[in-house]
Length: 340
Image 1 (tube, rainbow, N blue to C red):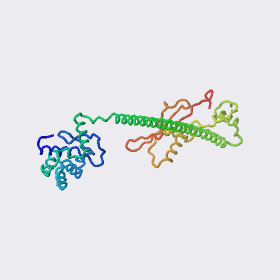
Image 2 (tube, one colour; image 1 turned 30 degrees about the vertical axis):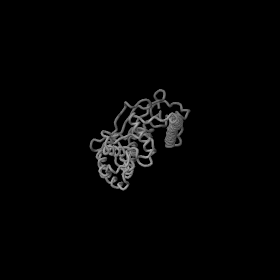
Image 3 (cartoon, rainbow, N blue to C red; image 1 turned 90 degrees about the vertical axis):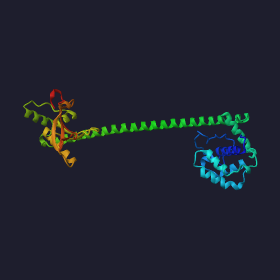
């Protein structure tokens, strides 16, 4: 407290400006003091921070015991100075409206009893640098409440962990099902491609056989004619279907290899020229504009079932080369003794 009435009045006004809460805030919360030199921050509970001029004016009237008719003048003074950071200047503006002779009591005795008790608790808390120590009964209740909150939080954490584990399990199961479905689709696609290839080979073999005159359409007769033309002795007629297919299938094949899927068979031919011609015709049927075509020998790629390998290159203006993925290759002789 100060020694002079004017200084005491100024201190009261500063205290009200710095610590008046907004209406509806629960009492006894030990709110921090701010708006002092070197202190910054914004508090939603503070009437000065939120610009609640009416609440500040009423608090100043209660703290100073001034005439209620000065309320509007006090509010106007606060409103005119509230944009300034310096609350000392704001207090001086309010003091200009409050003559010291109008004060009928010494602060804080003019405050209501409950307000005086809160003020004493606040001052004590500030002097100690901490909130006022609650009574033992209040401490026990607060400890029990905090323990209950901790138990509730742990239970909630356990529920969240269970939910997370269940969600991870569902995600893993979904991923496993997708992988199994993809693998099954790949296997089914491969089986369908194999069935189509076998069917196509059988159709070509049947078509080749149908082109022979009916009188010499037997396997033995065909074999005899072939060896007679080659000047060799006829061999025994094959007795199994695999051997017949080996004799019937032409040695040149044209395929389309997109790169990331199974090969697409364009067709078989008895000669290199026929196979290349079929491949080029198929390419022109698939696109509107085709550049100049060139077949490049790539025998280093011929291995296993093949002994000759050509890849098709497509040339466009500007030295642009495109490999459309079309290949012509010759089947290697796989029969014992080198005969197909």
